[in-house]
Length: 460
Image 1 (cartoon, rainbow, N blue to C red):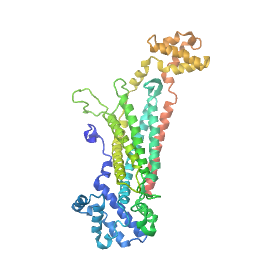
Image 2 (tube, rainbow, N blue to C red; image 1 turned 60 degrees about the horizontal axis):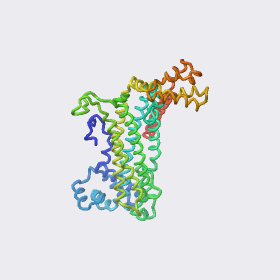
Image 3 (cartoon, one colour; image 1 turned 90 degrees about the horizontal axis):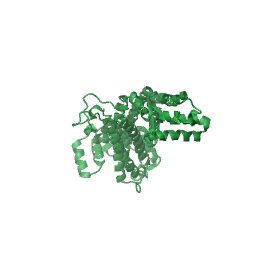
Image 4 (cartoon, helix red, strand yellow; image 1 turned 45 degrees about the vertical axis):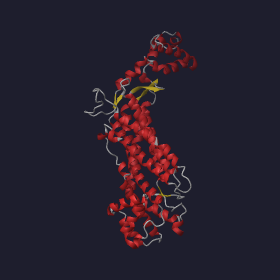
């Protein structure tokens, strides 16, 4: 999609697509083959010298690509030509121990998870940048009065910072879920042909455990090729994050319409919105995010279908999962790259926000008037009184402030100064500013904690 996007030249490539390119995946599979040889040598299943040779040859740069391509054409097999070439490179003595006891999915699924983990780390890093941008946005808009809207209609006054606070709260949960799922998702699979571990003799689960250690993964409790729920969970969590991005983009897209005019996404000089309408300043980034998020969501049913793998293995569901994983990761990387640009450069227009809030002629302040009057006559009776004035104003029978001032049921308890004060939206934004500032602090502290944890991991 990015190739057709007029903003694509300004959006950095997060590097996720390259992780799922054919040769990158082949190298990941070779990394698993190397870890397998190490694990089996650790347990005395194969000679240590053979393992050393195998490990030294698990470098795709050493492979004859013409031989590989010919092998893939002849066999139509996902892995076998790679194993053949690795065995040839290792020589007769060490080559006999290549791929010992493993089956194709053991290698490909575990190798693909190595790539998925790299994508996952990029996505979490991008999410941290999104949170940093949201924190700045919350701080600069915490006191910016805007019409709070429910059901598409004016409700009560709020501040634009409350929107950012809501998004931060949601995105922090996305980050939390992505962190929590890691030990469930990134698991080494090594159970042999049908998950029985028979091909590993007496070593059983021990060889899978050693494989996992060498790859910094978690070993599966039951290394069944039919287990897909943990992989489906990851796709679902990424889809949820994409939907959150779509929500933010849709709010910006709506706010950028001339009828609202409250925000505008960054539009660099020279950007052309239309080949025929010179005035167009289109919300390209927002639309990109919404379109990509919709495509990501379509992968969710596909991921769920893979959970229904029959018997002990089924290539069909493996292929479906591979497609869902790579597709979701690539598109989400593109989404988050756009989100950072969108949020960092978002233009806020407080004057237009206030003008829109005032369009109702004070009707947006009906609740505080009702509550103040309710202290004198009871909440329900006050609702009825204010309702009459509000509905009359809605029917263009007068302006809300004047209708209130003309109703003796109101003026018996509230003075003109009281009514004027109650109709001031700046006095009725509740804790919006506090929430915005608090969520900005949370977003920044989470980013700092992540930095500290990553530094500790590097130190270890």
